[in-house]
Length: 173
Image 1 (cartoon, one colour):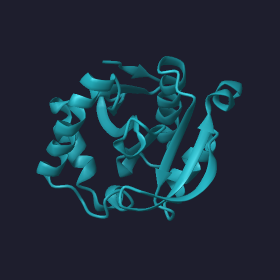
Image 2: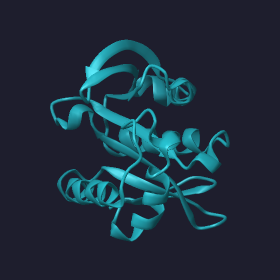
Image 3: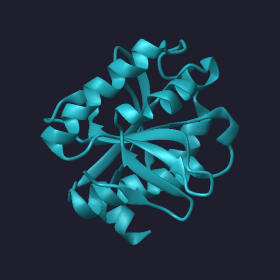
């Protein structure tokens, strides 16, 4: 399982030892506002981990937990997964951060590392990201990554803003 590194972050494949840090983040209603619309229970977060672990085994990628190197604190999570969880679809990236780390560039830093993994290691021809149409902060990270707005599409049982980029666009950046 692949650990990714950036200047300030270590991205570790999500596992049971991350439960406390992930639950602290996922139980914040503001963090989950555009993701599920409600804070997670501890059981919700454990279920997420339980769903993710076999994907690492099956595909060699899934969700990472983001650790701030300076403090060794879990501050976020993000993924490379198949859009709609269907291997027939393009790879998707996504992220979430603890509220006290918003606006510090961590999401962009992690998104860059995950996109590089998708293109350089997995050799994906393209990469997409989805967000609630009102989640302007996440859309901003997608644009900073070099993604372009593709339109509103129905994913994960609701209409989502979809952003996409091709491998060649990423390599030129």
